Length: 495
Image (cartoon, rainbow, N blue to C red; front, side, top):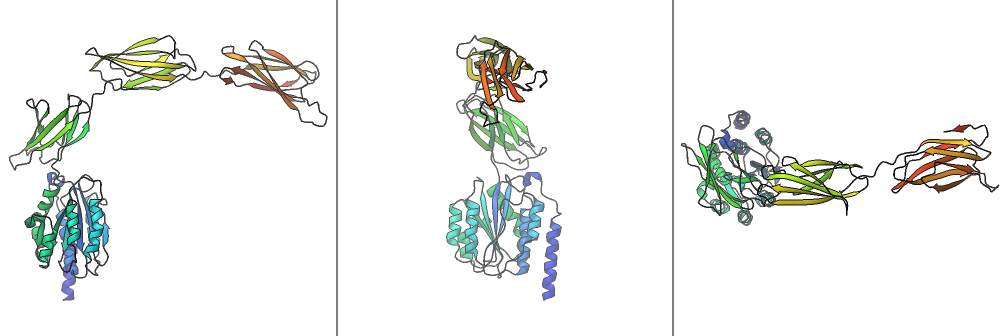
């Protein structure tokens, strides 16, 4: 008997391995659905190991046709034992290879059938999520002593979760009947474990009916356009889609379009801003009848250029001004006016409707400007937007040709050259010989000279005194030059 049991387990393991190579269903079935399915698998000691392996194989085949992952079907597995074990959460597997490998590695827990505790784990997994998709709890059990689960099942159903059940033993019929979501004929199955494969297609169709993504969605919206998206139910050769849409204010005027059977999205253009539209999509096929999908949406309020004005590439004498959105079909031309704030001379630049930036040059350094961008529309209307921008401070030029010429002992003639533009004067500093004999450390002396000065004489320099001259501007002191002076009369100097 034990030998026969082992043979059956080996055969079932081979079935699991071999089923991974079977041909998947067409893409129209693979891409049919969007929803979350949490499998509540009885893994207690009341389930024979042979039955447990058969249930895993049944699960593998049941979900094989679906596309997995966020935006498709998400599968989670929660085992029931003495303590529940979340084998994998809903977000773990996004492809069939990953899911099949995980199912093949599941091991039975044994122990008690503590379904109540497992449902307490399942409840937040299915209800505390931001995903606005259908949710299913698929309960696979032998039906033996599941415990008092009615209250928790009722709470799941009250929070929008569909409960489906498969029992391999004809027990606790009334409890299972009260637990599942109607209709009972497609959501509750009693089956012998040897014949469980017979219900695969029926249960899969019941799941598809719940999570079939028959939704027409708006995935992108502007003031004048909308992109609609849906899950394909046709192929290129099996039919076509008929799309119609109109504004709610113009119910008699409908725009109609025919789209290929392999389409999954369409862009509607030339819409009116801040207007509510209704769109319907009807799949046409001679193979079967499909539901007509519909969606209502409201376009965004009109955004007139310039809605945004930005400043970049700022320098001492230039500023680049940009604006948007670019609307060449609606705008005749753009006008850029700029002047030093608050009362500078105003300059004007006229630009074509295809241009959305310009470089303003010949500006004053360190100056604030008021820049106004105006758009003249084809209907004669105008729209303007202003921004303040500052040019950078001019680079402060350094001094050139600083020379120190010894005149007498402890005296030096200092001469230099400098750019005069914007100059406010010079700041000189040097090391002066300390008059107090008790201190050998020289003191630092400094003074200011007017911008017309290009030389001065320093006296009482300390030995090897460091002499520095810096230009002074309205914005601060610029880079200076320094030299070390020798106070000997042989005119030696170090620069």
